[in-house]
Image (tube, rainbow, N blue to C red; front, side, top):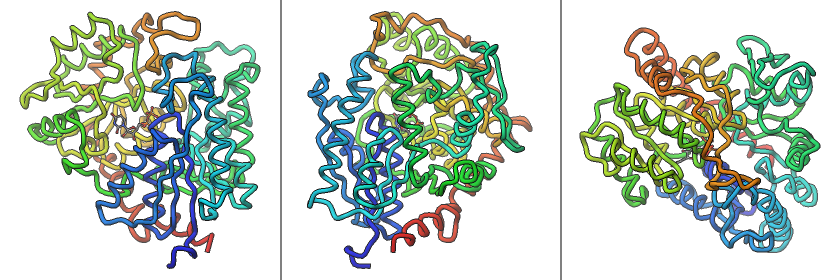
Length: 499
Ligand code: UDP
């Protein structure tokens, strides 16, 4: 197909977290592999990440019809340091509103770019959920606007029902009292407490609540959802979501399978990454527990200590990703130094990685037997694609919903038993009121964590059954993206709809 005739997708991820940029860059690689032209538009800092995903796909022989375009992010205009283009780069929670002011300015710059001569007119805009300004852009371009949330279909379905039926607003409900999310057909049953709700349901009287209402309005006005899932995964949730919203729902995942995870030393760029792959090479098949809470999740020091003590006491070797290690109190740093290994000595029991870990490659490594996860949807999809059972430790957002899908519907997880969200999400050591975020108590004790890990790695019939189901999902995930598979066909049909 000549380039001018190819449908052209403008992908505009939410810039706030790496975990929004990664799957949209992978989605771009998939669309391009299916014959579309793709332009990924993001900020300079995030463009480097998107470009590395595109380079990886191209090194595996994929197409050259992807362009990553960096549009400046006006951080300084909003009173932020230059280069502060993601929320994990902010210095405190108090800077979050400034980030969103800068993001609005970024939207204006992106719109100028897309409406100008520099960009071939897109056939479709696929937008990150918080980039609500893309709707006006798509309308000016007279093309459809699809939203890519990065959430799964089941979580989006539950959020839709929570908006429609509002069980959380029952007057007598206490914050930690469980209620049923209505209108979910079997095999689903979801019980949540108010404090486990996604942030969408913050009071609309607050500043954040008003912004979140803008995101809801965007969803309602958009033309459909491109969802990071595959149809066989979530027990019919994609069809239920289409029915509940009256919109097109296009399942395209797992996007991390856009190319094989690479262990090529040219691509695994940092020392930490090389060290942890070498450490894994020395371990027995399915023996290691990988522990990670996403691209920016960190827990209060008291909780981190309980987790750490469980990790060194459990029966399995552990690969532990610790974010924000530099800002931990000295006594916790000392404990980590004395009880874990940071150098990747081949025989060591608990390897701590402080930098950026090659998660997709780690999960695909034959030594990995289980994954303690915060239930971020990107991580879940990567674990599903690798056939790895999980122990679930939800932090915030829609992760308490994801936990119930993994444990009760899919049967590939063990719950650690966390009931409260972990709010300590940014680099910041102080919150908006100037108080320390590091003083929160541990909700989950060492024994409870260790029990969940031992159950996860259990060699008895229940553990075997979880491993069997996880393996089955891995095969289904792979088939979904093979010729004739559900996600493969959905990608083809999406592109064909613009010819
Ligand atoms: N990730 C990674 N290396 C790290 C930390 C995270 O590759 O050191 C990737 C991970 O593979 C996933 C994403 O970051 O693609 C995390 O996304 P998720 O939705 O699980 O969680 P979030 O970061 O949004 O909380």
